[in-house]
Image 1 (tube, rainbow, N blue to C red):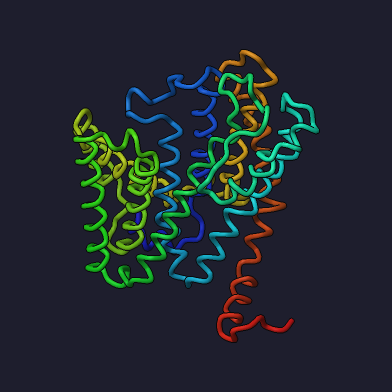
Image 2: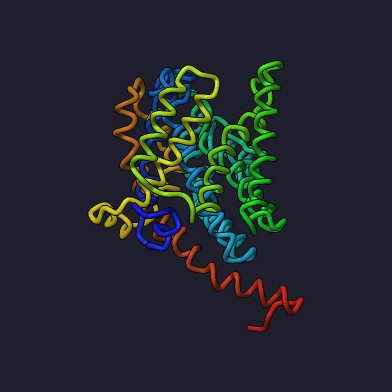
Length: 363
């Protein structure tokens, strides 16, 4: 295996497939509380201290940390446009379907009452803000085992965008210009991360501060991904190194630092597999990037199945939900997400012309 920078020059890699597996894992994880109710035990929770869904989200964030850092190097305007076009077109579609299709079908209210309720029309702008999320609509899914929540996956998008902002700030401040400067950033982040841990040990702040807890959990893999990109010319992708990382995680099991060592080892393993050359697997890239669609459509699809199939077991919920989720993800990619992303260069060029001239360029 080459170094990370040598592998990155190869256009084909396995990250589309890895993201797809991660998105499917979120569907698997959510099937337990959605079928059995809040607080239901999920796979891996007792072993790793995190469920399959959390592990999948960590995977998303470490991969994003790398490739979002790579994206920033193409320019700030291109970076911002690419990030907006990646998140919002698919998000707008799922919110429209939620309000105007899922809601009217599954609400316990009559249609007039549903559409006259102000919360129905606040659902979309609140969720588009990513910060003031609204998880329920009037009368929808009230009798489900996990009542009222329509799309519990959207909470991570706020932290994803916050991490994008971190990449932009670090880049604008010139902290990626040299390894020494970036080490300064990593040191600052490590001190912040450690300070929160110490504060939590004394005052259990992470039990009460949801935003701080989520940021603490999700920025770690993202910063690891950023570091992998920054030091890509020095980071080898070798099986013995992966073995050592796995051994370190095993040896730290039951230790206070297990989570951090595990996330680092998991992150290295993802990049080892992501850049592993296996021609049959690479054919998957010919299909499309369906992972985002699976991620944002899975929860409402599972809730619909749970509403229609009372007493549905988790495995049955997974089996019934995945085909419909995949269908919507495929349609979303080919008819919404990919066409939107194809406009990146045109939108970026237009914004550059506006920035230079101070006014919109003539058509």
